Picture 1: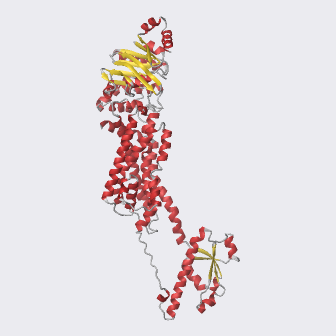
Picture 2: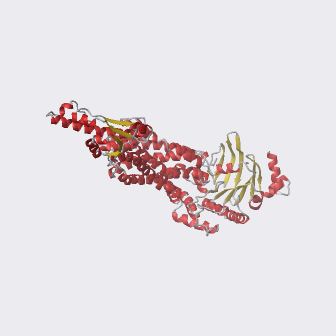
Picture 3: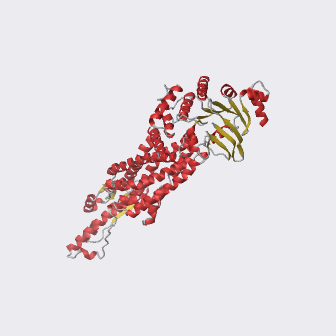
Length: 240
Length: 391
């Protein structure tokens, strides 16, 4: 479970995140929805302790992300906006490197890697160097290395960016399986269809603030719109 | 510590698969110094040697007037060229470099015991011929002195009478010391080898990782950033040390092909040199590598890092230039200055002189302290938020 309270972060005069609060629960997929530049990536970066907030608090499974950063990093798996792989290492070596940095024993790391390779359908690319991988193959590898330590919380920044229809479908299935296993899944996206198809809970962010928070049905009702996209436009317009 | 080791292993494994790293660290780095050196030595020293051994071509006018003189000069290396009509003009028009004219009454003067005249015709504004003129003059002098002594002896006098003053030059430079003067650049070549050996790793593992967007995922792992930095430093230093080791071995090999013997020099490039130079240079490897990583961490892109590091590469040449221009007497404090200290020590070692243990210890400690300070500084850069995020 991830709880974010009144998070703020400014870069110079730009207030990138300006009072964001939300909760992402276990067994749910929570979507941060917002236009480009709304502050989604900065919010996530503070959440996975790459950046320090100016103010506000983040708790992951009850642990404070600022004071217990290393402990928090062990309980979250992150697919960041930057998903570069080591192109001279094979997919398996990429995954096992991160397993080692997570502190996993070699045997455990190998077993977990094998399991993820099977789940993500990566058998035919596992022993290949990642140079020349397709976008889909790269995202799979990046997800596998992010989840190799079996984290309770999974954070993904625009996970379907650049993926084709097939890859998007299989990724969504994978995320649903994580949710059904009781994990807390939090993703950011600027795509309406993504949240509509995938998320149990939607947090709409615009201009660094949360402008709406609820299930798709709740949001439609609150905006008095039949269509989620119209509701989204209404919330975003209201924040401008 | 464990995490640092894992970063180290991964960086090494990845680099061993990178042709750029292999070429730079294990080929260019170790070989650039020795090869540059060999070429320089051959060019500079080889030319001097050639001149000394080759016959000296001189146009001789009136050779028939002094057959004995010509025969003696020939023994000393004169290559007689046929006479030309107007030697002054020929020299002016640069058709010939040097001509010698035997005066018409040479034979008569010689037989009468009067000073007989030999004219040298050359153009002193032309540098090329300078050495030749000196050589010919030297040959004539020695012939003149020898015959002067013989004439005195024939008159029952000691030749010593004609030599009231004798100037004895005793060059106190040992053969090794003379060699080391020429080899003042060798320490810089070693530093260059260290520099090139770690260069690509330093760039690739910091600026490169950021540019390829793999630094952010890496830093999200539950590992303190100084461990990651330490791992990267150790990997960079490992390649740099390998480069240095190969470079030193290459110098040993190349040393055999250097015309040091002909010049009466010798360089103490032996196992003993290796034994002291290597421990002396390893702290410098750490200092140079962490500095490279620091610079690469500041750079916004790989290209920028390459530019900065290319400039930084010139810094270590400063002590070499200073030491070759100003003949500084080594003082103890100088060993406490990284780069300068190693330069002094390596030069002493090349001259087969012992370096005082105090100086060695001072140099090692000072360099390690500097490396630690640079590490602390780099750690601050690594701890900053901006590091991971590609600008």
